[in-house]
Image (cartoon, rainbow, N blue to C red; front, side, top):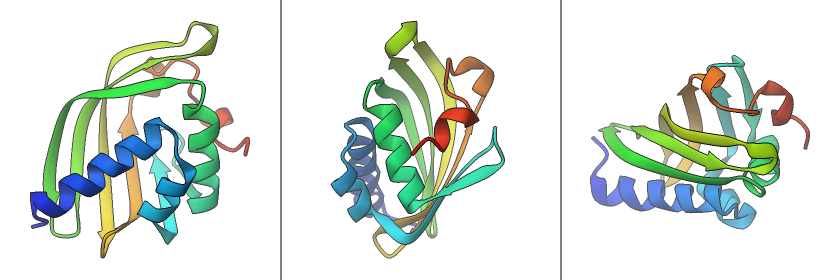
Length: 132
């Protein structure tokens, strides 16, 4: 199992970099062959696409996570949390349950699989993901 003293600093750094968003910090945390997959699109973004998306989406949208629960795995962790977001055009998400599976290689995130109910996620949909 991945030790909490390894898992927590990486998880906390990712959350900070994502919600800021900080492209340089994200670049440092993500492996060169990183991919993120979303359950509601059954599609994935590579590292370049993901960082561009994170910047374009999370820039104008204020996001925070609550009720975090991290479960270590041999090569990563599963995180369950609730998403709270406020953004343009009245976007308001309050307490959306989400589950993310993080896979590491060394100290870098190589894959993320995100599971959420997109019907409760406001204007976040597949059309916003590839605008970068």
